[in-house]
Image 1 (tube, rainbow, N blue to C red):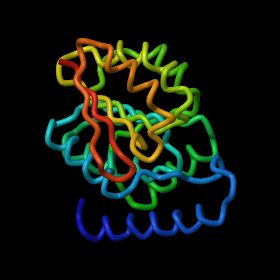
Image 2: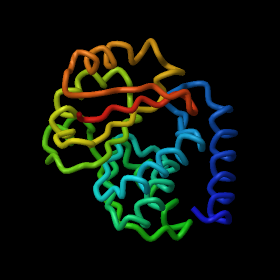
Image 3: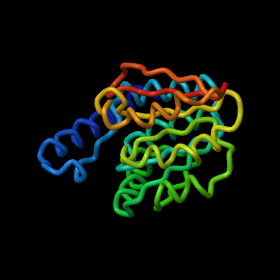
Image 4: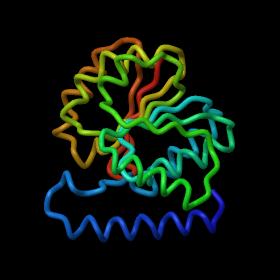
Length: 194
């Protein structure tokens, strides 16, 4: 990401973070991916020359900006799923405001339903949604991580460890996957198909 764009997007993050600090209800907050996590995932996208990426939990599009910019370098496509239509629209507006020209498909809908009907062609799936549903997602996530090297990245696994323990336990039972937790941002879980 070029330095000027990065500075502008980091200012957006600070503005959204300040807004979050005024909201008492967790569900009303933006709950954005931390910039260091976004940058790390962008490096993975470029390093593995990602062609197809799925984001579950668009929110206002802060993470989408990073991913779309990285995929511009690989010629890849991003599909991003958000259940709230107003947040989907805000994410679209942010992408347009920062003039990131990339192949992004915005879907407003339920992540579980999308996963159940999706075809397995993603190099990377990024999961940052309501954590209580993650165990329900695993069957379809496992199916979508169908080829060697495909990767699932999950945010908030250190900051909300108790909420994701059951989900991580399901993955640990699988022989076909390797996983690692990185203390970046709120904690990233990386899961790869062996």
